[in-house]
Image (cartoon, rainbow, N blue to C red; front, side, top):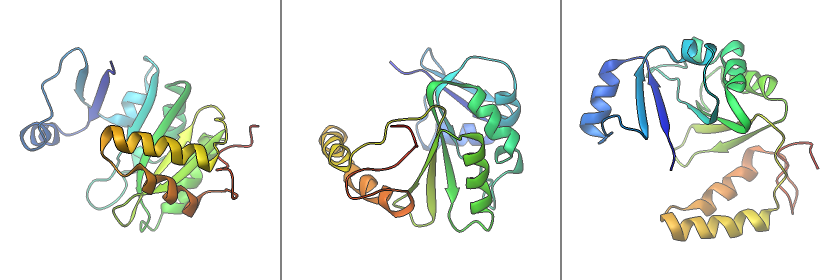
Amino acid sequence: GTATEVVEVSAQVVAIARRLFEVPAADERLTVRVCDGAEFVARDGPAFGVILVDGYDGESQVAELSSRAFYQDCRRRLEPEGVLVVNLWGSDRRFNEYVQRIEEAYPAATLCLPADKPGNVIVLAFRDPPPNPRWDELERRAGELTVRYGLEFGKFVRALRKMNRSDAETLHISDAP
């Protein structure tokens, strides 16, 4: 029941994704636009529940997809309780600068999730303050998702402890009660 809109600046990348990764043709659930992502989110348009950003060009983060203005435009295009998800390289010399920009654009809350692949860090930025979940609830839910999807969600829960504020009982995402 989810509709996905993909924005990719390179028609060649779209063609490769279709050929090698079985990305299907566009239909009522999938729209693929070949255009500049920064320009796309800067325009007026519908709000999204989630915006995923992977702004690397093979060598570094693309400046247009890591600017303060870009992150603010993404926030403006999110629905209430929407989330921005950004893939960053922890080894990028500007990593801390990118995270700081995201935190400034999303004062409600951000989380960092080190990915299983060494070096990648997923930053989740919340438009509105989410509740602070208890570790036991996160672990219970991770177990359910592991059974349902066959992925190791427990690893994600453990990884959240590495880069985020927490105590023995709670992951502190925001200052909201």
